[in-house]
Amino acid sequence: MPRIYLDNAATSYPKPPGVTDAMVRFANSCGASPGRGSYSESQVAASELERCRLQLNQLINGKNPNHIIFTLNTTDALNLAIYGIYLSQQKLDSSRRLHMVTTAMDHNSVLRPFHALRDFGVDVTFITGDPETGLVDPDVFAAAITSETCLAAVIHGSNVTGTVQDIAAIADRCRSKQVPLLVDAAQTIGHLPIDVEAMGIDLMAFPGHKGLLGPLGTGGLYIRPGLEGLLEPMRQGGTGSISEHPYQPTEMPDKFECGSHNTIGLIGLSEAVTWILDQTIESLWTHERQLIGQMIAGLSELNGVHLLGPKGIDNRCGVFSIVVPRHAPSLVSEMLERDHGILTRSGLHCAPFAHQLIGSSTSSGATRLSLGPFLSNKDVDYAINAIAEVSRPPRVVATV
Ligand SMILES: Cc1ncc(COP(=O)(O)O)c(C=O)c1O
Image (cartoon, rainbow, N blue to C red; front, side, top):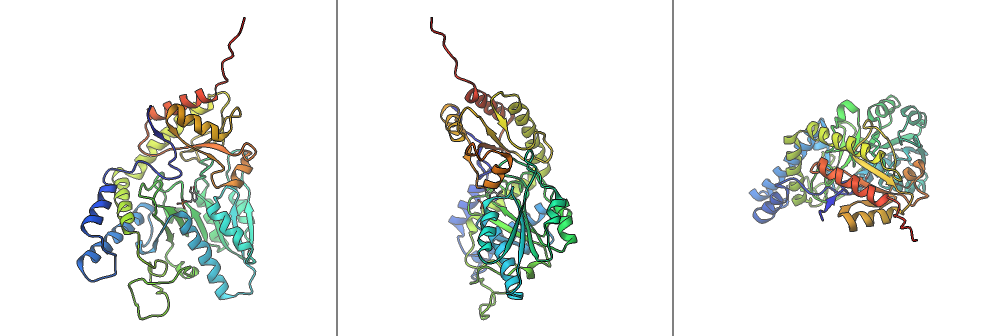
């Protein structure tokens, strides 16, 4: 039986050729910490990190590679942005009542920090979306912004329904109200083209280990040049620079990066992004769009399978959640693995409000299948046939 990995929304697998080799090569032949010594190994490590920043900046059309802050994952980047803004606003005026806006489609990595900040006196508005598609109306988003709003956060691609929000329109509304927009690109970066300039993105949190095809333990936050003063660093510590100074440096990226880096992981990420740039993001997206179309067509034809979210290929990325009313989502995942070697994820996917909105929270969530660049039409066909089998009613044998 094959093993077909359809959980790329959690982390991507496999990684492009060369990623682990580059990590092992660095670990065996260099191994030094970047920017921590004048010897050549440390300088080599520093130039590797610089290369990684340059490539990421190229991929997203950023203005300055030093405005890409390396983090542990998306969650870490989102916390850095959310608490960074909260702390800087507190520093400016601790008596001011703050307000933040996000959406019901967002992930717990945004929802939980926002809920936690309520305990510190921050007002939060959760915008709802369309119960069929999960799309958020940019005008409804704009209407929630008040004179006290200091941050708006929105998910780009849903990790439940695959819904892709109209970031450019939301960013436009935020810009006109002078509110910074934080975008969670966990499910879109590396899958589809993102141009932070053209889309008007102020802050963008992203994983290195999902669509960018790097190893676990990597991620980043892009901060639009000029906005770095809006964020207070959440952490302070050694940067290898101006050590005589008692405060955190204000230079980028040191302002937000302290302590030793996950250099081995970032070397793997650099190799993975090189692969993406060589393939071109446009051609990877063309391939994924084709698989998305095939998956929607195949799943829509199955009786006894309910596909959540957008039913067309527009406003959509390669994440699919299905409900098979006959079985609990966890049983569907179990049968897909046991009988067909297909790896999926069931449950609420750390997005309880999204499941509530689209009506799948009562069925304890859904079974999720998510695409990656190494999957083929044959794999998608195989998955559709397997789901057809799992959802088919048991045959009744007549006894005479
Ligand atoms: C939309 C979304 N945001 C945030 C996260 C958290 O990502 P990470 O595991 O990189 O922290 C995920 C992970 O599944 C996600 O799907």
